[in-house]
Length: 428
Ligand code: FAD
Image (cartoon, rainbow, N blue to C red; front, side, top):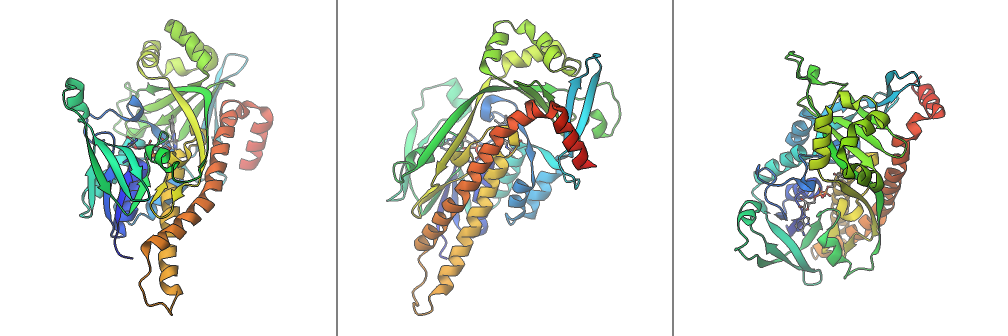
């Protein structure tokens, strides 16, 4: 296929991986990103917190394995921590605290704790070295014409300068393209413009749960050189304090700390926001043991400083228009985080999409021996995108549903005796 002008909107994990797949096929790739370069320390991280630590699973790993860059997977996996299962924390009627490990997989396979920002940076570092890739940071997509294949971006002042002065006016640039890949997250502007060109079914739902980030610091008393001994609790598990209506979780980080998240209905947040001094006793009652890992002062400081953010679940279809645009990742199927699959599914979108683009390129070229004219890339891509929407939407919708269901499992079902007996039998 003649090499084409691809533009990727959004340099998050999914957009960056899509750019890598496209660049490895020789296309000219331009990446437009609303924020400044993530690798610049002054860039405000997504969601305004230090960083999300997330669970990377085979779905996402496999997509990176097929990206055509061995360095990527080596680099990403080097700084992950294998988690063999979850560790349920609770308190017996006697007052004794307990920990109960539950394996994720009877065959002993792990999922991995990964730092989303580090994974994203690894991708940007690889892309930066490719001669056919160009970055445009501080560029916000504001409009697109998917018939004429032109898009408009507002060029923003960098976050550093705009915070000091609002004197600089944003200017707009017009960009033409052959193919746009929209990976601009849950509030996708590409999706918004795509809706004007395709009869998109769209459904969004905010669940009545907010999340806030906390931190368990490394074990400062332990002098050992071995990094794994710097953890206060097992680094090989995703820790859960189920609270029936809410839950607190902790995922290990390489430096010995844990990134923790409190998931809770908005009414409970409002109750604690009104008087944050109630937080430690609330934790002692619902998440026993946490205040011995996070001192009450730090607990209150994190609750007061870190944002209390909503959770959205989005389903839509189709994901494309003609041969000119497709949406991927959260832009196509933002999901609640309880199945640990949002990013993993987004990375899998990329692998699935490029497998179909490759397949249609190969089939259309060899299909018609009577017609010597070279295959039209637009026709090939149109067919590939139609197949992509058809096969991917049911899978993405299923993962969205599983993610919603898994919240009940994590915060409540893991406590039921029947569930624990079934799990024990499975492991036996
Ligand atoms: P994003 O990461 O949202 O990136 C979109 C990019 O597009 C951003 O850089 C943004 O600045 C840019 N952008 C937005 N608008 C524009 C515009 N108009 N023009 C140009 N650029 C634009 N997933 C997992 O797989 N495992 C987990 O364990 C997990 N845990 C999670 C825990 C929490 C608390 C949350 C909130 C999410 C979790 N996720 C998890 C989900 C995961 O974070 C997302 O699915 C993933 O980040 C989506 O990647 P993305 O690249 O599609 O979108």
